Image 1: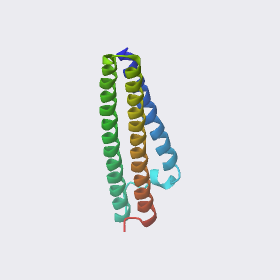
Image 2 (image 1 turned 30 degrees about the horizontal axis):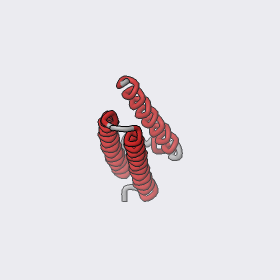
Image 3 (image 1 turned 90 degrees about the vertical axis):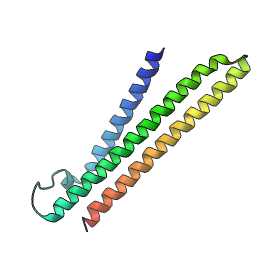
Image 4 (image 1 turned 90 degrees about the horizontal axis):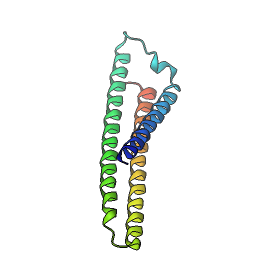
Length: 135
């Protein structure tokens, strides 16, 4: 039973990461010059490259924090699901199951909203970097 839960969690996480990478690659495709910036040269290009790396590192750090929060919430939900066995009658079991389901859906909503906010912030910073340059 636990193997199925962990396999489902792994599959969901992998799918989420793959989707985010695909979105990032498509978004990056809008600026074809970004991927092929010259390797040497002007100070302006070096400054833009440095800021690009900093913004990317910041986004990866936020993604890691979000994933850690998702795993903690998932473990908490698994722990709470074991407590369902302590229900004394079917009505109590139903009520606790509905409550757990509502908490799980709310947690997922909050996590996806946080990811969306982080992505929007990153897009805003990258757009600003590309339009205003390193000024």
